[in-house]
Image (cartoon, rainbow, N blue to C red; front, side, top):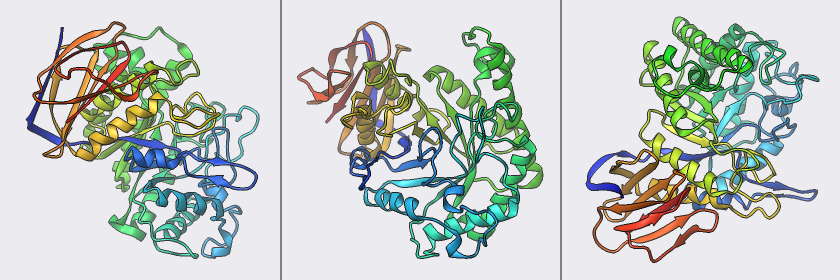
Length: 449
């Protein structure tokens, strides 16, 4: 018997944004775009969507990327005629219609075919001019420049995964040196903060993460199972940590502005929690212990074999519950695209209908709107719980990640509705008794009162 303890009289903190997205869902045809699928994110009270790889995983030539917006780097960056905002305008107009705020990545889309030819991932030939181009992009969307908008976009991320590979031949995001990226970040962050001050937040760098800890846990002071040794991955992952230390040392020495640090994980809940702790310790070591952090790419059930499965819906629910109690301030799931992808886990690629994974985000959105996390605990390491209230309404998420069913007792009083999420249940109401019921493997229960 697994006991779930809930205390609605013990408020803890605000429910964090653990259900933000990467890539908002939309479809494009020969005649028009269909942005109506963003309504599903609106229904789940998703407040943010990160704009990276929007043009497609293998590169895109219309949306968001700086080379798409400013197509001739030799043009006059102060002249509105030098900019092509057309497609990005249409996208951001649709996002505004569905109350979806952008996290705007200033940079380029990943180039997975770079072993053939890299097109857009080279360091800009003039860092100061690149920063001024970014300035005018912000002015267009926040200050109305060039027949623009006043969206008040808060988060502006400088590049993405510049440490993607330890050599330019391996790197799918940056063909320059680490020091060149550090300088680009410094020049751009200083310029943007000088222009806009605290009306925006600048950060980066979309770190690939810290997977080396799983191969050498004792080196980093963690008692977790070791992954089987893989020389190529070890070399790559060591570089990720070396790059992190180099970046933090550089921005500290140069007093570079930074409002948030972003990073990525495609690992398990347990390993992601360790990486979260490692990042917090490392930031603290360099004097950035209070810095806002975003895990703005994550997916712990990616892969064609996991798409639309109960494993996927339970895995993402467990991650959101666990990270609510970690250091990271925001999660952006990768991603909510409609097209077929091992990473786009929310919508069936032919019908565009939500699959069970989406309903875990829908349920978390209800916790998010309630606002205040209250104390919840369990004596079972394979069960995750999270509870919230707004002072009147109450809700509890319980996730079973075990391979076996769990009989649960929950110390709640009164009448509750118990809904289930798995492949056969899409946040489906049941007649289960909230005080005692059985939760199947990879099943999520959502209790509301």
